[in-house]
Image (cartoon, rainbow, N blue to C red; front, side, top):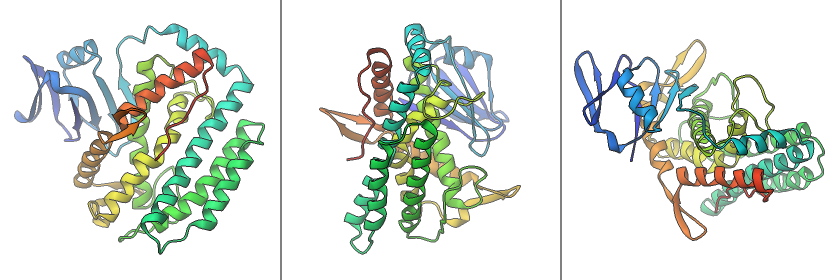
Length: 328
């Protein structure tokens, strides 16, 4: 099945017979059979015809909307999942401070473990690099995490671990980029721009997985609930940041797939230009389709994300301990 990324401004997606057609100014840019379309990502000023929307909704084809520069805006979704019992349990668990504390520790521990595994893997492949002092600090934070008794203090540990990890991340960039620290909002350098764009794409993937499972994406446990903020997607994204996006960013930089010339400045913020955005999306999709060993199965990263959403549903409904995805 295909993921269709639409970034040609002024284009239109329409349904014709048994295929989708992307056109601009009466010129056909793309034709694809309807049965091959699994999801559609739309960036910026692109139109959908009523017939196309109707088919996409009726067939539960995931449609996601982003700004031109990659900010996740929302989704075209069919009638809400019938799994109302899951959502009732989700809301009840949200009222439990004990559960929020326990699961927040699990989410953050999973993220910190994966950051540690990334650094250890890099050291094995680059004997000239020594992250040992940083790894000792990160390991000590995992022990400290268990002693915390509030979600805010858990987030404090997560922030300190992230700062240590990103200090090392900058040293893993070996080509013509510089990186000082992670700045989540309003990226002012190319590396932060790549990370933010990647995390926006990944948030959308988590949103789709949890909504499809039957969750309310806006009720999370680690991240504070706020109007319009998909906090459950932000909770579950933590275990996937390093294996999917961070490694992807290192790949496109260190293999010179994207160079410093592939960015543009808009109102003081740095974004990928159109050519580099296409390259990044292509490699993102390729990464989402990579098969990895999960138990006795070979699953793509996209399948693993959906699997983790189902596992979390069992945690919510059956009180089964949740095990975050771990990098091998």
